[in-house]
View 1 (cartoon, protein in one colour):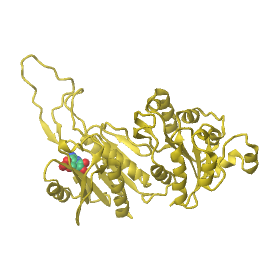
View 2 (cartoon, rainbow, N blue to C red):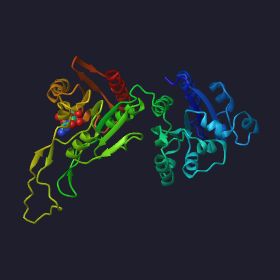
View 3 (cartoon, rainbow, N blue to C red):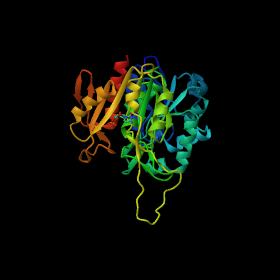
View 4 (cartoon, rainbow, N blue to C red):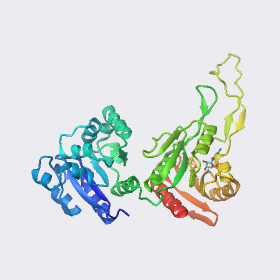
Amino acid sequence: MLAAKRILLIIGGGIAAYKALDLIRRFRERGAAVVPVLTRAAEEFVTPLSAGALAGTKAYRHLFDLTDEAEMGHIELSRSADLVVVAPATADLMAKMATGLADDLASTLLLATDKRVLVAPAMNVRMWLHPATQRNIAKLHADGILFAGPNEGDMACGEYGPGRMAEPLEIVAAAQAALGLGPLRGRHVIVTSGPTHEPIDPVRYIANRSSGAQGTALATALRDLGARVTFVTGPASVPPPSGVHVVPVETARQMEEAVREALPADAAVMAAAVADWRVENASASKMKKDGSGKAPALAFAENPDILASLSKDKENRPKLVVGFAAETDDVLTHATAKRVRKGCDWIVANDVRPATGIMGGTENAVTLVTATGAEDWPRLPKDEVARRLAAKIAEALA
Ligand code: C5P
């Protein structure tokens, strides 16, 4: 899948550097040539010998290594690659990138390259969350640097949170997407995600418990397969993925308009938990208690059904329309009926009774309902559900 692609792999100095060795193997298995470059700190964790042996080529180390310069100048080294990958990208290395420092071989290559750069950050959670690091990340995003991870989880330092380096296969997928090589390359997919907020007055609203986690995971998985993703998201509690076009909305009607504006698309995956009703008599100013003890009466109007109207759209219907069904009872019966009623191709159904811990949780147990039947998937992390669904979407659009 990466045949004949050349990857310049810059290995930063962090404990996750050991995973960079596996990453070299994963790239090579897929046909890529890898040229490793180690920072001085990286050499404290892995040796140039192991990186070079796994890559089957010389591992580069120092800027002023004259032999290296005679063999290949640093400018040429930075340009001869198809993609530059930094894994692990430490806080220090990213700070250098954001500032434009070039005081060693790795940072000089990053400044001199004319190719896309994909970073896989890895650091302690406090370092990741520090305003200085977040400032640098915002700069790197603005500079067009691509990100894989970091993931959230247990860390080598014993803490928990965001900062774990993405797994090697996730970095490979992100590299493929960066090189425009995934099976969904050239495809446009719209993903809706998160809850909607329906205002009661300027400070109050009606919402639901959707975190946006499943929709975000889906947008990420589709992006990783090379799709151009328009991510229409209500106010979710998880941040949107990088590398997708994010359209933030609040209400169902705004979401409908954003979906319309994003058309045409090859597929649409409607994972948003759209409010069925909005407050028809929402107040333009903050509602006040008037001392009479009388509560205001809210009148409701039905929101547009975005999934149904897109599925029935004669002119602009995407080839594949996927809906979600969050149910608390008779999941399969309701989902099967919903697929027909809404006119979509697939329904991804799940049981959201509080006891399942699915709504707002990290796992999902879904049943995929299509025109030809229903498939029960085992309980899996939402990321894995997303990857499986994205792979099925790629097959359906092939
Ligand atoms: O009807 P219900 O809300 O259970 O349907 C769920 C599916 O329909 C989800 O895919 C959701 O994104 C979509 N939906 C929508 N617009 C609405 C309500 C639901 O697109 N107004």
